[in-house]
Image (cartoon, rainbow, N blue to C red; front, side):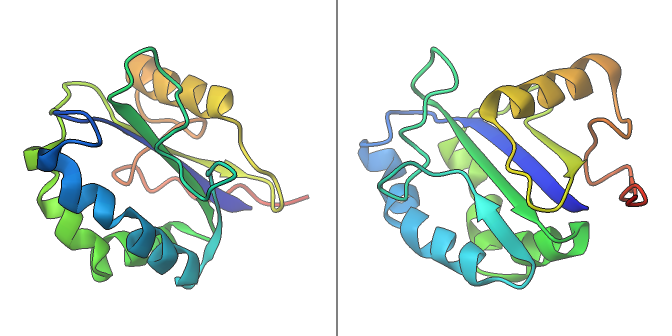
Length: 148
């Protein structure tokens, strides 16, 4: 089993704005860092290698990030022990705060690539029902189900 994650964020401005320039300019290096990280398996991207053009919402300022990792530990190592953490610390400068969950984790079979629709349904499930084996956050420590 592998760990899938979806993260959404509503930018405070258009992606081409000066306010988001540093963020946008660092997307490629941060994505390359993710792809080179131990435990990385896959990430959502279009044919140009970018995910910011993938519109999952009617609001064009909402961006999505979705990836699959070998484990919770490998995702956390990338998020919190690499240069990525510097951008997380400045999230409030670039993205609106949400009272709702903005990310969700769930287990997938090895080799499976989740769809945006599935990921959004998992996020909605987390928002409506709270932490469960179906949809969870880093807080809940849901272990991967035993493989058959």
